[in-house]
Image 1 (cartoon, rainbow, N blue to C red):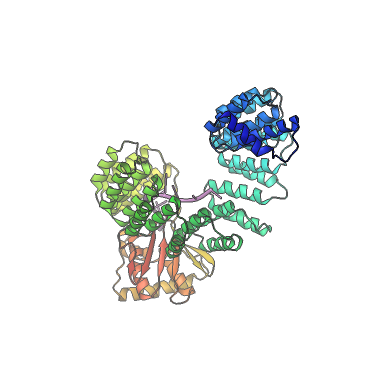
Image 2 (image 1 turned 45 degrees about the vertical axis):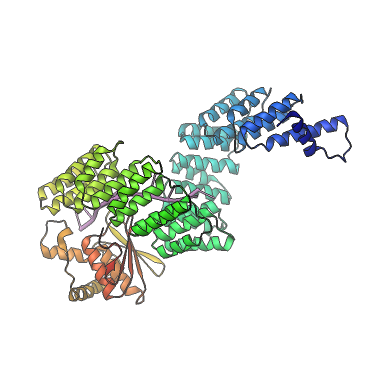
Length: 605
DNA sequence: CGGACCGCGT
């Protein structure tokens, strides 16, 4: 762009020909025109060029102009803090507005230490921060997870009496949340009178980012009961995420309803969250339907669909969706590949998994992360290739984490390889993750091998470490209420009819050829005792309860915290056949759909 | 603002 063109454009922008043109007025128009030219720049290069040419024209720049330039330079989407700094340094007496702009610019560009340094400089020069300074500053503390600095800043907020500013309050809630000090977040939240929608959003978001899903739902309920119905879209997405993790399908459906009633067109983030929620709550069909009707799918949508199909055991379909994604010229990222690999692993597609792993590196140039290695160890392990899995771990260029070793351990349990299992456990203990589950798997493997001394030894070690494992349970939803069952449970009011039902079911099942499989009752007790215990596993109690309390033919959905044992798997297949019920069981990370005596996992567990 | 690997008590 030449000098004359800048000048002619400023005339065009600022001084229509029909206005009277006194020299001063024309100059003022030209100045404004220059400002809008600078504001409309699309890159820092363009900005620098235009700026240089305007300076050549010899305009007088007052501090007002300069601070406007700092704003443009620091906060536009192509922002350059180096250049913003150079203009900022030319301002003789910058005030809080200029300092705030610089802090916000540094935070936007993630140069957070610089943001804190500017704040220090501000204090040294005796300029008092205001309610626009603190939100940016607290965001820097949040992103740095610098609790100490955050507390200091909080103190400063108090000193200046700014604790009633709603933006400052929300930033404090957010900062403490990001620093994993949710108690302090809540303390700020509680102090606020007349909580606004933004306040509720901040505290719900803080709990969501820490994975405190139950608290999220409770806060959302509280918010609604206080008459605060119109939540922000982002809050509803957080709440949806909580529903997804907790399997709270009914609340998830309500949120879907809220979206449909209040927003004419759902955006891609909301749609993706809804799909994820439906799929992870067991309604694969509904998720698939929403996915197919999406007007524009992005990589997130494909990602949730692929891993969704994976957890439902539909490996081939997941690979099909993946090829669709490639056909649409969307390039897969590392997380999409985690979905693809876990799809292969859950469905036993060993060759496809290995091919995908190669393709990821050589066709899409993605460096495998520990998650990808974990998937592959799982893939080989489940398929019984234990030795290969171990060699694979040894050949990894990065340090294997606990999940990798635990996948191997699990494979060793499934394929009865105590020797390799002991190696895996040793590695797990070296990593010091203090996980009660690891001790239990090993002790159960010893029990399987009838090595009761070793069982006792492991249990003792576990007790010495103070590790306690929460009991296995099954949840079932009947008439909009969730009921929880643990093994041998007699705490339900209907327990006598439940146990009668169990008795009746057993009789019918035996008639159809069911034989109890006591091999996984890992206790040193006699066969009869084992059979008795097996009969009352939490999942069976939950099924009996659902059979009694729901109408014939209606589906039964069960959520468990642990994987189901072989016997419960076989038992549930028989029930689905004899009682003509579709039963879906969700464990920690996958689904089993039982129908007409067949399970969707095709017994590849 | 949204997506990720593994396992577990009687």
